[in-house]
Image (tube, rainbow, N blue to C red):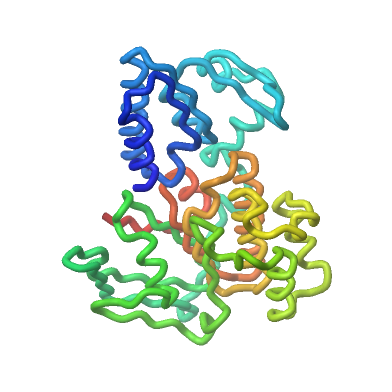
Length: 318
């Protein structure tokens, strides 16, 4: 909603030049299509549009000219059709191949290790209201160890609310939620869509992650191993959360969660700020860790291809 309000504010004055930076981040497919129509209408009125995006689907929808950048340099440029359908630079080819629908990791087609009687969280007839608005209506869900679920649906359909309800972060108005002993305190971890909200702002990242590692008895070198798995330099730990990018914080949140050896991970648009190559590497790290631990994963996303790659089962809302 904030992104759509920002678009309205930027275009209200009728400026001919429009620069949009990651405009589709966190939007469902319908909202992205509406956004594309608005941006194309700006062009039809004679305006100039510069779109900065990781979303190749949006780039294809908008058409025009495209530049592919890496390390502050343009490595390839040309029409959208030429560059994205027939890339000539190695980095461009790897970028296109990193779209979730093209992933070929062993776990993409892997079977669930769920066994009867290993439920971690059970929701029976859960109802949640905000004022007069019913957000969740009689939702039933059983998440077992080793299962990977995706939760799909348009913006405002209650996806994040359901995740918070399952973890006990939000109360309910009807029904019941039961968490077994295996999903007790510290055993359920949440990856927030806005990771800055989950890191203490006045504490260095190294201290924050070190505290988690000590609290949960992480093995020596475990933090460094996870940082390498998500392509982060250890020097970043000297900084505070406000001194690194949102994408770096999303990856650090994955590292922090896996330091705890969780039984259940709730990932709420957990890779929305990452480019396709980094998204693939970070998702692979997370899923491989979840599989190794026999943990459950609940992935909230608007990206149907990402959901299909990650999850065994899908719960549609809205």
